[in-house]
Length: 559
View 1: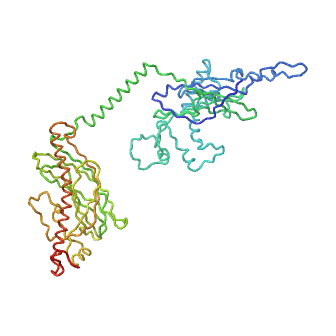
View 2 (view 1 turned 180 degrees about the vertical axis):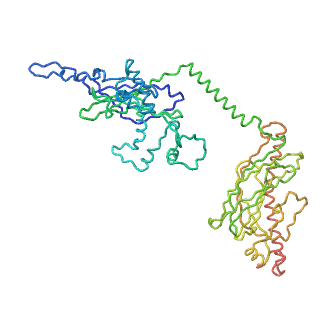
View 3 (view 1 turned 120 degrees about the horizontal axis):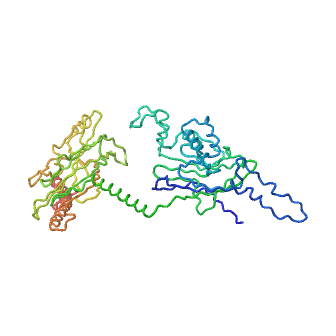
C-alpha cells in the first residue's frame, strides 16, 4: 500500500468573496488510520505454529448501538453557521434543568426534533457556531505564539478581553444606543471594547470527537479540525487551508491508546450559473453607473471656462522662510499688485496677507525664520489692445519684513519685490530685500533701543509702481542698506481657451502670452542694466569728489 503524504502546513489562508457567505459549503472527511480494521485481517495459519486467533481481539459493538466500522470513517457537508450537535451537547440539552439561556432552550427543541426523526446525520464531526459559548472561551484563551509552554504577558492578558466581534451581539453602555459622537465619561468596558479597530467578525469551528468506542461525548476528546472567520468586508480566513490537491491533515490522540486520524477539508460550494453571473454583472454595472452619475451631480457638468481672449491665473503660494536679518521675531507683510486695468480679481479675493511672528534659528552663518505660511489668489487678464507694440505687464509680489521686540514695537527689516513667474508650474523664488538708511549714529541707536525707522509710505515704490505715468522715477538722495532675503514657493496655473482652440484667436492669444513671458525676461534684463547704470553713476560721483591732483588725464584714479 502506498505511503500517505501528509500535509504539514496548518497555517491560515485568507480569501475574499463577493458572494454572500451563506452560500459557503464545506465537505469534511474524517477517517481513523490505526483502527481495528487492521486487526480484522487474519493471515493464513502456518503449520507447526500455535497462533492466537486475532479475531478474538475484535472490539464489541458500542453501547450506542453503532458498529465500530461505522465510526471509523465519516463525511459531512457543512454550511456556514450550520449547527451540528456533538454527543456531549445531545446528552446535556436533553436535561431541561441544564438549559439556562434562550439559546439553550432552542438547542433542546432542535435535539428533541432530531430524536423524533431519523437522528443526527453526524457522529464524530460537529460544529460550534458564532453564538456558542465555546467560541467566546476560545477567543479569550487564544495563544499569541506556537510555543507549547507560553507565558502570557501583561499586554496579552489585557488584550484577551478585547473581542473583535459583531456590534449587535451585546449592548454597549448599559444598552444605550450608540448615537452619541463623543462619550464624555467612558466606562472601563467602553474603553476596553473601543480602543482597537472593531471589525465585525463571525467565527465558526468544525470539531471532531475522537474518543474511543462507547466513550463519545467527553470534552477531553474534542479536537478542532478547522476554524472559519468571516468579516463584514467579505474576507474569509480558513485555518488550516482547504486540502485541495495536497495530502490530508493528521491528528494523533493522547492517552493510553494513541490513535492516528486523518481528515480533509474541501470547498463544495455550488458554482454560479452563467445566467446568474451575467445578471450579477449587469447589476454591478448599473450600480457603478448610478454612483458615477451621483458623483457627476456633485461636481456639475458645466466646467467654468474663461471668456474668449482672457487668461486666468491661479497661484497657490507659500512664504517659506526669511534669513539674514539683524533682529529676531520676524514676520512678513506681502501683497500682489495688478499692474493695469487689463488685470482684475474677484471682489471677494484678498491680494494681501501677513504671516505669524516666528523666532529664528541658526543655520550656518545666517539666522533663519521658517514661516510655512500658505496663501492663494486668482487674477484674470483680458487683452483689449490688439496693437503689436502694446506690451502687457505681469503681476508683482511685494513683501515687507518686520521684527518685533520684547515691548511689542516693530522695526522695518527690509523691502522686496519680484515679478510673478509667467510660466505655469512650481517655482521657488528668493527675493533680496533692502531698507532705507539714515546717516549718523542717532538713527541706529533709536532703532535699536526704542524702535522705529524710516519707512516707505507706498510699498509699490520698491520698484517702478504700476500707477507711475512719468518718464523717469527719481530716487535721488535715498540711501539704502542691503539686508536679508525672503523665500517664496509658488505653484502657478493658467487657464485660457487659447490653450485648446486652433483658430486665429489662439494665435492672437499665444502672441500675448509670448509677450507676457518676454516682459518678465525684459524686466530682468532691465534690472541688470539699471544696476550697472547706478554703479557707473556712483563711480563718476566718487571720482568728481576726489582732488584733481589724484586724477590722471585719462580719468583713472592715481594711487
